[in-house]
Length: 425
Length: 101
Image 1 (cartoon, each protein chain N blue to C red):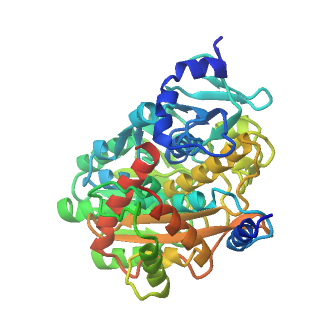
Image 2: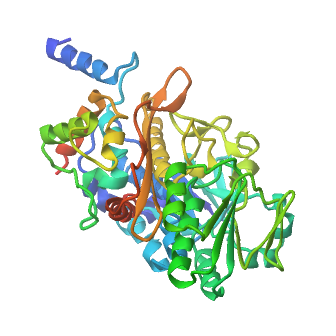
Image 3: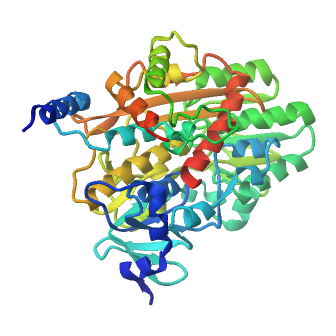
C-alpha cells in the first residue's frame, strides 16, 4: 500500500520552489503542511488554488477528483436548451497542475480516517493530510423514488443535475422528441442544489420548443408550495414568453416513477411524459456520512462558520452544497467558491498557529437565463455574526433583477468565464 | 510603544469594528469575495465584459462603490452588493485592489 509522506510529496513537487516568484515576497509566519482536497468542483478547485496562492506556495496541495475535466453546472441549462455545447462549459485542470503546483489525482476518495488523517483512494493507496478539504457535492436519495433505484431506469429517466454526460443525453432526448410531446420536470423539496436551476431549465426547454416544436409542452412538477427562487420573475417569463407551453404545478411531489412509460407518479395523480426529467431529492455526498461527520436533518454537514470545519470532526473542512447552509444561503457554485476562500484563509492561519479571521464575509450572485439572451439575477451578502455564530444575510443588501434584461445576459456569460478562471485559471 | 504604532493599532481596531483583533489579511479576504466576477486579485478575464479592479486608483474605486451604494450610479447588481459591506470594508477592498499591479 502506498502511503504518501509529506517529504515524498515535496520531492515530487519540485515545481513549488520555481513557483515562489509567482506569489511575491512572503512576510510573517509562513504556513506549511499538506492539505488534501476531495472534489474538484466550484468549492474544491477554488480551495486548492487559493491555498497555494495565499500560502505563497508554502502549503502542498493534493486535489482528488473523479473526472478528468471540470464540467460546469451553471450554464449547463444552455446546453440542454441547445444554445451551448458541452465543450463550452468544460475546463481542464491543467493550470492547477502547471501554474499552481497542485498535485491533481483523477481518482475517487472511498474513505477517510479522521483519526489517522488519511484518505483512501479507489484505485489503491492512501494520502495523509494535515488538514482535509471536503467538497464532495450531493448524492441523490434514490430510495425516495423507488422506480429509479436501478441503473437501467436511471439511464432512461435522467436528472442532468450533475453536468456531464447526462446533460448531453437530456439534450438528445429533447431533440428526438416529436413535436406535440410533453417534457415533464420534477423538482424536489428545498433545499436542493441550485434553487433557481429547475425554473431556468423549464424556460430554456420552453424556448427551444417555441422555436422548433411549438405544439409541445413543458410541465413543471414542483414538490414545493411555490417557485423557490426569483418567483415573480420566472412566473412573468412563463406568462410573457411561454404562454400555452409552460404549465406550472405546485405541491406536486413525485413519489415514484414508472420508467418504462416515462410516467411520474404523484400522491393522487400521474403525469405521463415523452421526456421525463427527475431532479431527485439530495443530501451531502455519502462520503460525509460514512466519515462520521455530524449531519443536520440527516442530510447536511454541520460546520463552524469561522473555519468551515466540521462541527464534530477536527481537521476536516467542508464546503459547498454538502453543508447545512446559513440562513437564506443558496446551494450554488458561486457560494461554494466563497466557502472555499473562507476555508483557505482559515486553514492557512491554523497551519501557521494563528487564529482564523474573526469576521468572515461571503456573498452570492446567481444568474438565470429565461431565454437564450435575457437573464434575471438574485444576489446576497452574508456577514459573520458572533452572537449566532452564523454568517447572516445583510438586511437591505442583495435582491433580484428589476426585470429580465439582455445586459445581464452578457454579464452572466462573463460571470461564468471569470469564476471558472478564479477557480481553475 | 511608539505613538505612531499605537495609532495604527487603534485604527486597525476601529476598522475591524469588533473587540477581537482583526486578521492581518482581512483586506485580502474581503477583496477575494469580489474575485468570482472581477478576477483573482482583480485581474478579470479579458473580453468577458466585467471590470478588472487591479491597479485602479483607490479613490476612484471608493467613489464608484459609494455611488452604487447611494443609488447615484445605475447598476444591474452592484447597488445591491455594495450595500452588503460596511464603508470600512469597502475601504479595505479598494485599498487592496489599488495595490495590485
